[in-house]
View 1 (cartoon, helix red, strand yellow):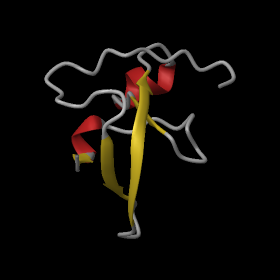
View 2 (cartoon, helix red, strand yellow):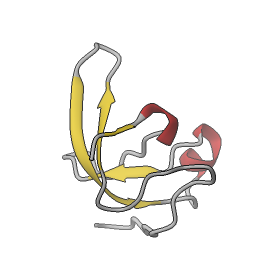
View 3 (cartoon, one colour):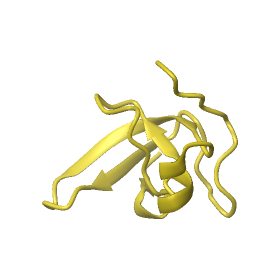
View 4 (tube, rainbow, N blue to C red):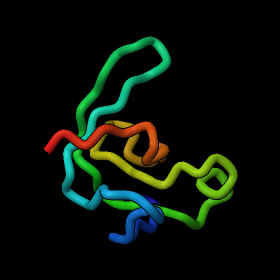
Length: 73
């Protein structure tokens, strides 16, 4: 993963961990399931939008808000 420094530590008050399968829904109402590959807190986008969770998707570099993810395993 180019220039993406992921850590194992989930956000505060979060029950998610690396390897968990989660479901998320995009703005069009389509639901996706992916595994968590890590967390990142260092980039400006992460800090501004409070999105820290990275998934094993084609857009693994795009972080998600842990409050918008539903753990399914």
